[in-house]
Image 1 (tube, rainbow, N blue to C red):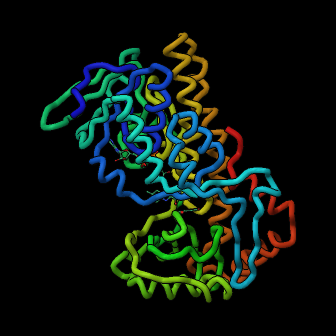
Image 2: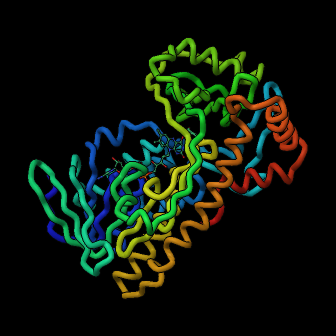
Length: 394
Ligand code: FAS
Ligand code: PHB
């Protein structure tokens, strides 16, 4: 049981990938942290989310000393496939960018980070409630919270808000001092996990008359699939059989023929939105990951953007705490947002290119087909997509 700390250098709110990776990198540099997480560790680890890691993310996990299992169990992918009914267009990342991506579930990344943080003895408090950030614009911010029925206070030099879209950090920035940009999409992704052989050896992003589908995987015997559903749908509206029927309708003929189906071991609906909060700093409070931005999962950017935020912030905090150089923390928000907006554009563009919108006319459907045909005919178009998919430089 983590002792109730009174003081630390960096207080981290949120024990998801952002908070854990930031804490691990800071600890390795000799900076003390405490992580305060609202839910239980089991709850965090039960969440099935991202599946694709950019090469920059893999590098960061190496730097954090948590890449052993990733190296052993992750799968390098040199390309992926976009389809329009039976048209299949392969995007050859290796040929077009010289890079690849790694398929390794966010759940595994989070598990590896928890193990590393436990090995360092970092205080991680779970099931923390009523957390409030006090005096973030002063030189002595502090948190109050309840844990194990006790009210506690944590004094710190800096606060990292790694508490996701529904956390308290973003709300701590006065509403008249933050600007929020948002696009809520009129559909969601119904995702399932099944112990089946993946439909293909690479990811398939499918546009079809039946809507969007994504065929992904976790390993050779664990498939991850998504189909586009109306926002009004509930998970209980979808039997496994109905899901497989919809997926088959979206996939190209050759892939459909070889599809192995089986019982779902997880089934959930994720809403899709694009969201950015500016700035990502308020005094000594810094927003990281989903606390500051949300992308539709179409471009596999959510987790990867959280990692680039951590890249910028960990460097900045180490400089500020070790040498008193605050130029990094002064530049953090602008530096992170520059990369965030590029990923935001890419994810928005792919989402519009691949999803059917309620009430759209036949022209819109033709534009989607023309975009995919252009992708099949233009190496330039494929290179532009590949450069964004494998991840722009940090
Ligand atoms: P997270 O939301 O992962 O973690 C925030 C943590 O803060 C949580 O553990 C939460 O319990 C905690 N917290 C919240 N409020 C708190 C408080 N007041 N006090 C203390 N703790 C608090 N990305 C992809 O790239 N591909 C995908 O397929 C994909 N699918 C997704 C599906 C869903 C349903 C969701 C919600 C997201 C998905 N994402 C996907 C995005 C996701 O992977 C995020 O980008 C990633 O989890 C970001 O990590 P964090 O910033 O750590 O936020
Ligand atoms: C996943 O495997 O969960 C996944 C992969 C790519 C995406 C979104 C989700 O774009």
